[in-house]
Structures are given as C-alpha cells and as structure tokens.
Image 1 (cartoon, rainbow, N blue to C red):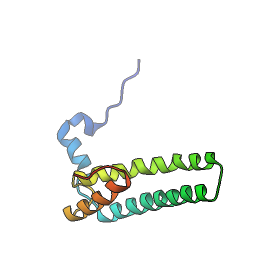
Image 2 (cartoon, rainbow, N blue to C red; image 1 turned 60 degrees about the horizontal axis):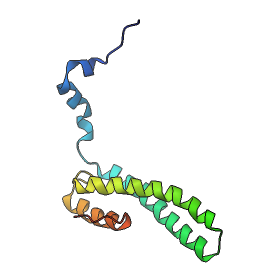
Image 3 (cartoon, helix red, strand yellow; image 1 turned 120 degrees about the vertical axis):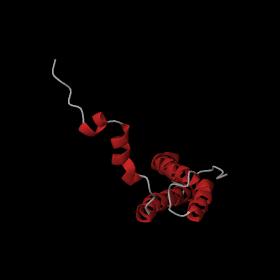
Image 4 (tube, rainbow, N blue to C red; image 1 turned 30 degrees about the horizontal axis):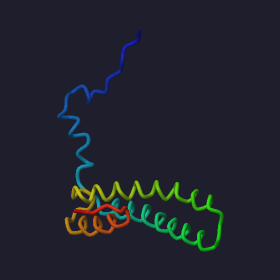
Length: 112
C-alpha cells in the first residue's frame, strides 16, 4: 500500500486550521449584495413566469417545470435568510434584520 499524503496545515493541529479559515469569518457587503442580486432576481422572475403561464393558459407541466429552478433559488434564499438570523450575512445587524424579514416572507418562514 502507498503512503497517504497529509496536508501540512491539517497535520499541525486545529490552531492552524482556524487560521486558514479566518478570512471567511467576517461578513463582506459586496459579496452579500451580489448573492442577493443573483438569487432574488431569478427567484422573483420565476414566480412571475409561473403566474404568467397560468394566466396565459400554458399547459400545467410548463408551470411544474418552472417550479424546479424556483425551488432551488428558494433553498438558496433560505440559506441567506439563515445567515441573517445568525447575524453573519451583513456587517450591520440592522441590515441582517431587514433582509431577514424580507427573505423570511419570501421563504414562508418567520424571522423571529
């Protein structure tokens, strides 16, 4: 049997592991804003497409196909909501609370 290569940082112990992930500890407003834009806009567009499909008389399977990506975006939105509940999505507690309430309504989950 061959030898197993072990990462030097992982072998050094938990302290070096904490140091290697420390850069992910603080919220970043630019990344948070991009995550909102890239999640919320497609989610809302898919909702409008589903409503329009029903009103336009499109076959029911078309609406069902649209629910698949909408469901995935809803899971992503719930993840952002969860980060807001832990006060770790935005640097500001107020921004976390505001977006937490908004995303809670969109994911049918109470914020508090």
